[in-house]
Image (tube, rainbow, N blue to C red):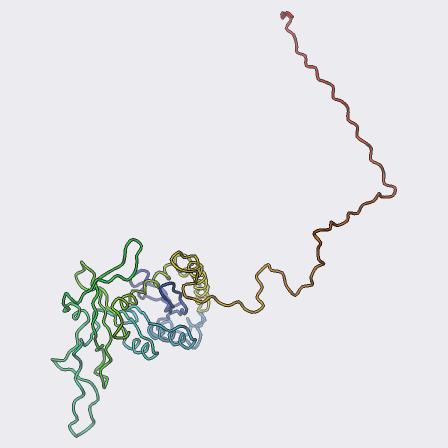
Length: 366
């Protein structure tokens, strides 16, 4: 169900596979998926025969992955889940409508983008709408001309001076501290702004260019406040490593990728059970972690329902047994029985010493 030739993150290339969109809650102590939905390619979503066989609900229509992700964010906000910064990879961050939708939910974001993303560097921007000539409609859309053109984030990064780059470490790795070179700049996103009547607000462009690489390797756009510290911005951008690790463990240790059924409901039930088991494991891991106090990584333990009774515990509603007195022995059923036959006494006799003799050789002398 939902299998099509599409990009597979585990393989790093396109192949026949299933793809799910998920939402996780994460902090520096722990992370856990809280929403998970299968992506249905268009040829699946618009095929009534296959939908009926797989039991796809009627309300599920074709949606792009960024559209599904926005639905998951809206549902999380309506459910009252903790709000924070939306950290997304380039598959979602490259979509301008997705980033606009995240901002509409009141959430700041740190979104990875492609090197071809176009922006207006600080101090530049599109032209204002053409002045009204007095006839016809007033022009309301922004303009560009030969001297007013945006640049790609890659072009902007390559033009930065050497002093713009700073070595920043964001966490301890397995063998050493993880660090790289970063630069940041205030920009305005340029995509589709000729359809707008006012320029977009400024946001951060964060760039990573590791030492020894021929060109920058990663780019992020962020609507975090202008006064945020440089190291804090890098730390949030790199927090996605937790999600990568979560799904590696879910697939390798808990069998998330082992589902072989063909039903919509079964697919999501399997994922729910795997994620529930993983939630228990990270809670236990946080309890016994030597690097922190005994807590579940910032997640509150669920409260037990009223009247909960552990398995094997006695039922308090049952009739109580008579109290046992451990200081008084229970009297035995003693007394001679009438007409009880006497048992004969078994006598023992003294054992006679055993005499051992051996055959004598006729030639042997005494």
